[in-house]
Image (tube, rainbow, N blue to C red; front, side, top):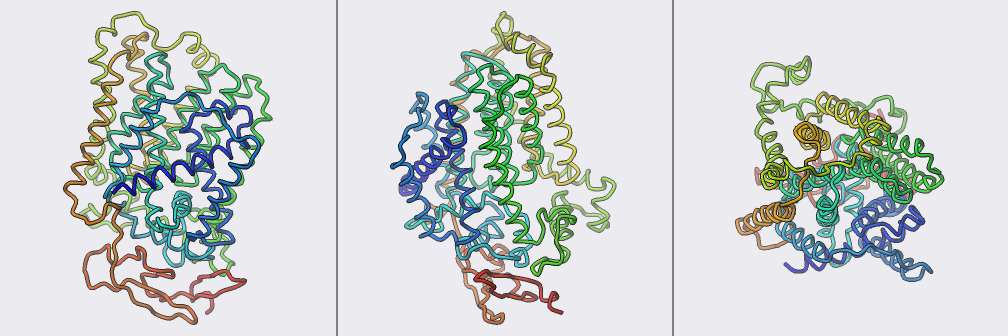
Length: 569
């Protein structure tokens, strides 16, 4: 059991080291103001960037990943500037965060899509360098997530494939450190960003208390939420160096979340709005060059990977596809849209006579979708508003006192002088919710937009009732309550889950082989009717649930190319 804790600490250390190295390049002088959790988040993005580059030429095998981290350690220990001067950090927060994440990780059940396409994608990445036409094996591989790239680099000696299961845990550790540290600031200074991070922290600790609920929706959502948080801090800050730091974080987080999941499509708005403010404040923008090159290259790598996998830069849009390339899957755009269309609008709960195509038209789906998602909506609303109401009652006496809720000078700068704040927030909410609702209204996809909407409602209520109101008491109490809820829920889960291993479960079952030309194709061959045993899980590369039927496999210049047999007809 404690090997999980040891490996969590080791991986966290390696991520921080990576973040320190890249921070020197990305932030220059502003690096000295970085918190340890910010460095960790930068380290995650840097490692993902590295996987894109390496995987173009090599598989992310245990040995290759070991050498990547070995080189990172060499760079760290033998560079002239070895130190980034961390702000004094509360080690109690580090201890609480690692303990909480450790408990959350023990025996967690993987996400429902883990054995279907998350783990099989990782198996492909660690077994071979980039594969042309990978989406021909499974349509889900067409909209690949950079988070699975990051997970793949944790495939290390001793840990092996189990290491890839710690990616969400390491992220949660850094995020929890951020939540606990930043939320303490509301006691000393209450402004929009502090109120936002306080309410968001409690919501995420309560609602996302189980790693099994995360998949890569959580990483995408959390990086977008943090982008919004630092966006707010830019408007409140007067210190030029801090403004530069916040802008770079907005740029990095906004870019990264977009490569994790396209449901974070509003992230470019935060970058543009932040840039507009910097321009208005007449800050020299030369500091943007390095992080902009880094972010642009990350997006470029991701798009190239998409193209190599599917023949399309963005498979959801047919005009981005090059149908003449050998590995292009005819009908890939229709396939990925249908896979996320009627399904995400609760067609499986529909009992009428409409076809899937008719169901999604003219809002025929809304009633069924609402009935299906109503309990989940209530869960999210309760997780957000319950701790706020408790804090309100604890601070009820302060409601009638004249205290500063938000600094009036700041308010003038934010609302009057810089109308871009209110415009950006409204666009973020309205456009975000509109596109989410029309395209793919799964609640976990819309978390950032629903969260900001609830925050805006809270902010308007507080200002309407008493513009000077602030939460002064009960912050520690409510966080203890939220963490106790999180930990207790996970301890009960561990006690009730029958498993001989403390690591997350990976199903192991029989598989068979078929031959396609000179290549062996593995496929699930379990007699068990359990649907998850029809997936590839960790079956060795190449695995295809359809036994390789209709596919052609060939090697060119040592690269695997998978295409449809009709391409040869």
